Image 1: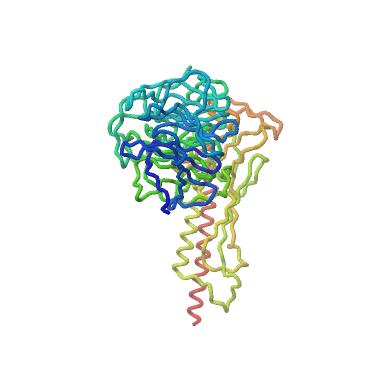
Image 2: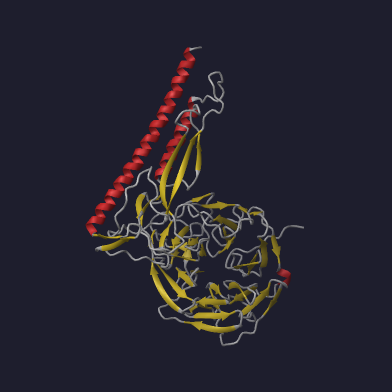
Length: 566
């Protein structure tokens, strides 16, 4: 029996229920609306090069459709709710439900009045309610009449309702939307014109028409039923639409992928991250084979992966219909072709914070203590990270045993590895508590060059809420090559306003005394701190280089003596 291979390309829905990723509806890319219903089992490992789809067309009662939206809801949160969509079958119901336990479809009876079939929108589930904002009303096929409302479907009580539109953004379609951990829904980007856009099918650059900016995002509070707007900063993505958005595993960042976009005048990327602590965009560090950009795809967080399904913009004969992005490490995402279901989805990187651009240094920061590579922590709110650099010697070496003597080429590799480590150390590319084995010349275990312990201060988020002196720490921004000083932030706020440069009272509870810092004093303290840090790192760098030279010189002298004695 030949394995099932779907004809689907884009405009589908993707819903995760009980370790099954259900794919429904969509188009084949030739303007033919497909009748699709199948799933991918994500309870077992798989390779994206060998996807084992399970065809469910035999139980599919829905007419062919595209651009619908779906969520998981119901009393037990195990029912697929499908709303809206474009169809040529006028008998298609407005809402369908799929019972994942009995594998059966039904048309629910919903109280309240709603006759609007919206399309090109994203449904968001929160506490059993499906939030359906804006989108198009396709009363006439192949046309779009914008609907600017917040339609709410209660999937537990099966009733219609509406949310507030006060301070809501402009109406739009093909936008990005994600539920945040604070019960807000974030909306961004999209298209606000009824005319169709044209784009390059390879680069996905918009050639005719436009898309909306991501320099501002919009928050809908599902608890208090109100809207607010946040301005963003950093490496703001170019205007785009038809992209996917997911919430990072730590709940502190939004990851977006793909979409058609307005050419910004430079080489753009398809993967961006929005840091929710300061609403700053950045381009994440990524390894693995970078896939082609996609448009009108879907994305789900499954385990530690951002799972991207189908879309337009890629060659199905070359690339898989499923893309896997490992997002478990905020310092480096990984494109992979192997799915491992054994890793839970609550993995959060314990390494340094994401390389998001930070605001400029506040001039009212408190005085800073002197730090060096041998300093010790001053209170329990900071931890120290030891980077252990091990230079491997010849175990069991003696004057009569010539095994393990490194060649000149191997010594060169050792030196290059050490210098690479030094560069990474200065730019904060190494992860905390990481032991790095560096090949180097053979040396006796009794000498003083085998191991170096370098201590670097790293901020640790405190689990209590006691007042502490907000001592800044240095963070190296790998994306921008600049030095940024991050100050302590209030954990209960989302967006941090800049501190006004004025006289600030700094209460040092460890000393029990009150210190008043002025603007000029703080600037001086910051400069002194930065100078001391720079000198400490520079000196440590030079010390390590000197030790490497000494070890290499000792080995070369030994080689000369050995050769002369032959």
